[in-house]
Length: 329
Image 1: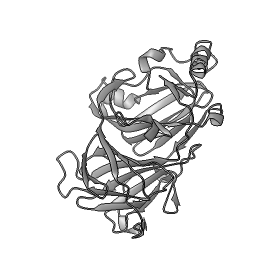
Image 2: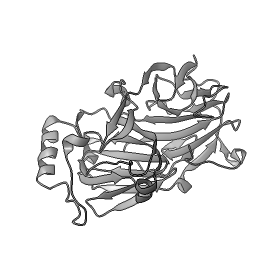
Image 3: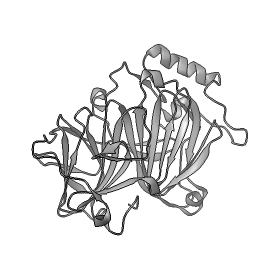
Image 4: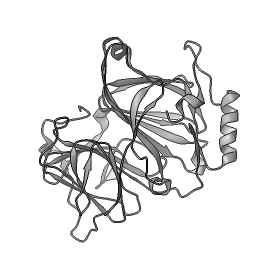
């Protein structure tokens, strides 16, 4: 799992342990992500399935894409599809993915890069494997997080942030036992490169066997964790977690994660995403690729899509698109 690594973790800025008076967030629930397929047939785990939406706010959903090792000719992506009313955050841990959109944008993200797409008022886009992976095969592993937009930002113009792995804020736990990558938001005075409409914190931590990661956490934010690989425990009661499981934490101002002394053969360390945000607390209407406040706005989004108001596929691309095919791509 390449993502971003460092030669000497002890040279990084350290995250101070939470104060002794802080309250470690208890574990409310642990869920196991069901597996499925997305787009043209690439495998995903539905990371937050089973967690009520009121506890996810401002997040909507998250898919873990892969980890899958494609043979030549097997790699798959998504067809052209629309979005409105929220943001997609695609974090590539291993491998590469390219995209095109109806605004004329395009690019490739790879090994630790993040693409932050604000759909806002509406956009069409496509995600696909690179030609190299299609021809020769290779590993593809990443996540896509959906972040809701508050009512007044749902009509913002579409925008992209291509966040290079070189720009992530890299931190060490207090004892050097964990590497923390800050993708967006702030942690202990350190800020990640992602610019967000909804205040959030988004981290990827690698915790060495037997190490404990203790993080200060904004008490106004919710708190979630998702295990990409490895085994460990969460919370003050050390609830067991493993790959493909999500944790919803309760109230408090710090988070505790511990990696097991012995890891399995597929991962030498605990790889975990840690997320939290300020709840938007607005009416919520979601169907397929649109996330709005009311059912009427959803109906308008579909009407606008079918009338071409969300964009037009560039003429140099063979169009194929169906909202029904990729309700969560």
